[in-house]
Image 1: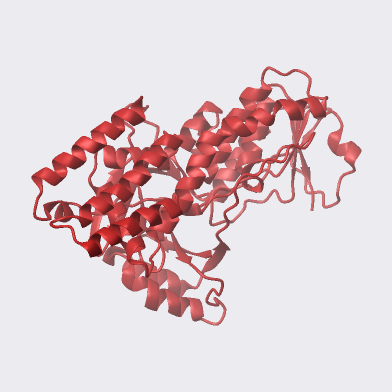
Image 2: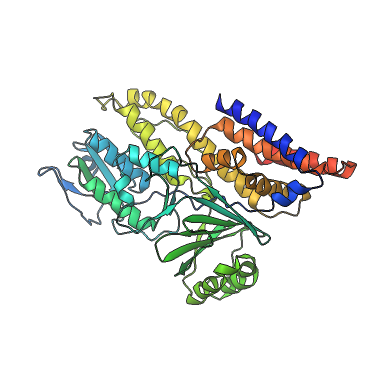
Length: 459
């Protein structure tokens, strides 16, 4: 019912807005900015711990040899390969349900990654549901309350719809490695978890002692040719991610990357961040990471189930990876809870086919949104794409239902596919309607038709 009500409300507000603001005053009102996106992609990659079955205690081990199959499978109900966010969370929740779990992870040291640094409020709610909310404590995690969007010297702030949730519910941004280690520590408190130890891109910088224009918000700059992200990862550090499209990335070692960042990127960032941005470049700790997107392709295999980044990746622009991984863990936990016997691999594989259906509303919505927003927010020589980009910014700047709905989708708090379709095409229709003001012309009608077509292609 809500999407229908939202559509009616959206339609009424659009009509009222255009009626009140004839002579292009609507366009003036909407020159604000929205910051969409937060950061980067999901994670997966770290660990759990080692516990001696005889003592039913957990202990770390750094064996470099590959354990024999009999050693890995003995006395284990479930074997998890990879102890990142997804692997650690799954091990903890299954261990809490009384399962005997073994986790295989190649490296127990704290990871140093530039992804998985933003957890949306929807992901935090899933963390609470799994009993893992303590994992954001003690790592200098920063509360995130929404986004700020910048375009052509203008800005706008959009807040998460948190009014009806507990005061602790908000997004969190942090060092990924610290969060992973806390997940490992949490898992190590359970006696039934055993760890077996076996042997386009983002350009990343860390800005130190930097004050963001909007505190506790992620910042997305709609730059050319593609977005630039800023978000806090501690009380004194801000992560900057510069999306570099194309296959040839400037070399870091010979100074090409520093020159690119200073000449092409720096002029487009807010003035408040310019000096610390240049200082971060001069320090030389520049890292790169490929942006990968991989749709979920179910491949039921008796005795195995892919989770996390191994199964499904989306563009890191919206920071939805960990939210999807934790949502998948909740779905899998609920499916496994009624089962006492996990020894019949074929029957279990058949039973778990419903996992792919149950995860789809949340996972596919966040996946589609990430890809669509990246395309919309990236620069283009196509006039229709440029008009779509501006229409999206102005639509979100309207506030109310126009921003609350999309931000609820982005944050993972209301990831309904119908809402995604509604708002995405509302942006296209809104952009088309603006082209008819103050008077329609054949050229504007043609551009509007191309805008609608571009919207359908992107979606």
